[in-house]
Length: 291
Image (tube, rainbow, N blue to C red; front, side, top):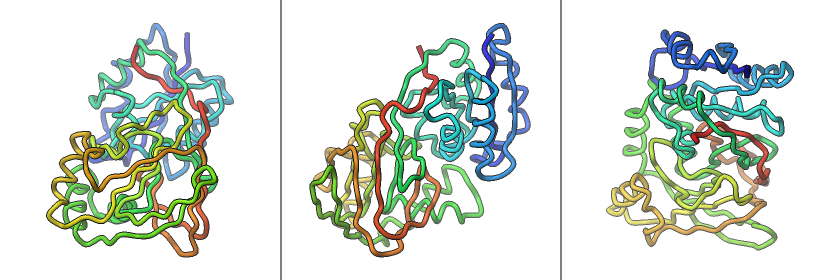
């Protein structure tokens, strides 16, 4: 039998976690798995619990939470044979949606009962681990505000986007992408391994978690009246059809920077100073996906 650990973030999303242990126990196949369920107590705890699972020869470690929980858990599993499973309970669940993992809790657990293992890429941002997206534009601005909001969930995120969309100003960067210099003026600048922020907001329609390349998505300055059309295109996987959208790919990027910059990694806000290096780690993580 295989050993499986579920790492539950009790603070992710807006859903109550009281029944999670019961739902896991009734949905997982106990004829296939020896089950261990643990809860995180503080930021960074998921990585520690995942590393312990590697040392204790678990076969699968499941992040029960949002993109931040997935990021932390994956950090502890990278470059090991232990596979990452995802039961999405966060506000966005971008990586889970990219991997076609059900948003329904029970169905996501049941997927694990009959699964396959796939190796995917990950990224490093100034040596910080990233599994999905890294941004230093409007998406980062929203991530910082969302972290400070009194409430979580999809409705809070949407309200922030609608409130801030017309206020945010474009920023300028010089980027060295695979030794080629590029000057960018962008409203939104995202470096993507997977395709979306979450909630089906697709910012990198052609991103492939197995191609060894960083997908760089740029939304340039646009008239205010275009904003709702841009949001519509993003939510319907059509952002690449906008004339304000640009894209290129690279395996390694240096963002030349001499200021303090707000960023986000997998939705969690960060502050960056000095040059920013984004590097791909090809096929460095095993994940559980549907057959």
